[in-house]
View 1: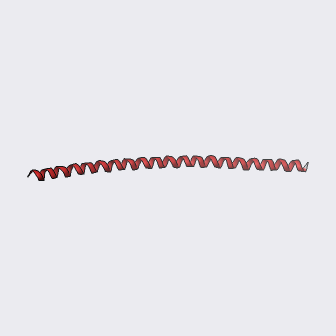
View 2: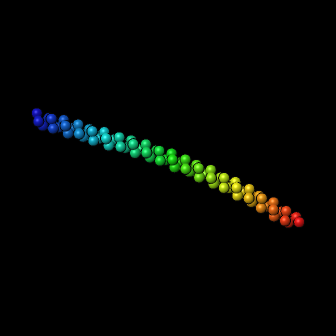
View 3: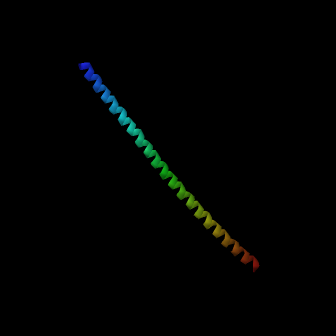
Length: 74
């Protein structure tokens, strides 16, 4: 009778340990997904900033070309 109680308690302890480890994996997966979403968002913002810089560079190059053509005409 004592052994049956010990094995039952051991089974319960192992079940709880396994269940708690399973929840940790789910939480870490959720954290990984959240981190990936944050990285994707940051990469999107960087791409947007690069596009804005390229657009500004094009505007400056265009203005410089107009100035150079005006100087050459006079």
